[in-house]
Length: 328
Image (cartoon, rainbow, N blue to C red; front, side, top):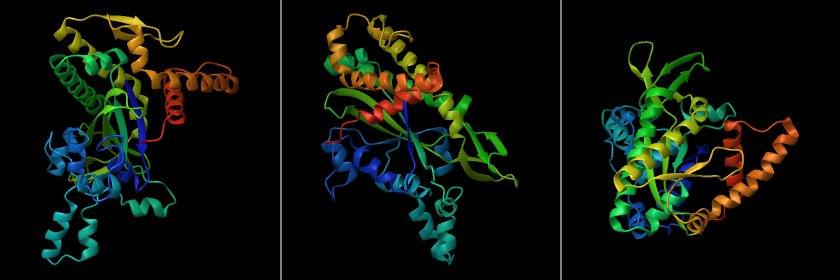
């Protein structure tokens, strides 16, 4: 399953540093990100995507707080501080040195046009409720299998987005090109805002990708985020299918359909996991479904028909926002 949120405001990186990069708690002022992650029992963020090579980063490498700030807070190279110092040592003036670390169009220029810069998108992957129950209550071997399948399924979905979906655009959309190389910072979480077990991964996709410029050299441009939105349902389905298939084949399990919302496609749950445990694991999901029912009724009144799959996904996002408890 996959949900999407925008990383839009210039200070949005602060939210991800304080409330995503190390879980859903509150990070004490002055505590380093690495110490906060260790105290929360969470692994450090890791870099994913083929676009890392252009930035000199390594897939699977650790995401630092400063790198996150530079990329998703300022739209600059994750090693901008080092690059800027080197340019200054070569007697390049300060303004030029800073400008040469910017990826694509500077945020200041976008804001000068009274527009809100879109710095990235948060793709959050999570398994269905029965797999969460197995992961939370199973033995260590079961948990390792599910963790590994979760990571591989995310990699599969991201590769598909790179190969089949990702495009860049420039000149107000008049220029377009395929761009099979995303830059992603991934952060693992193990519970939800209610404190219940919930394995999920925040994958922050940078809204900057490389393409060939008019002179044949590499330049940075924005992603076509509309294409990403169009394919959210497909990417989420691919993740779920890949993860469920690997877990079932490795552990010798089977799946059964479970109707969540009448009239819509059932969710394939792991056979043998009791319904009361699935309901317990999906308590927040039930609140979202209740809110979604109200939003769907209003949609029908406004448009005269039920929403399609993409429309329902958008309504689901609004329902999730309306029912989110405050972070503790």
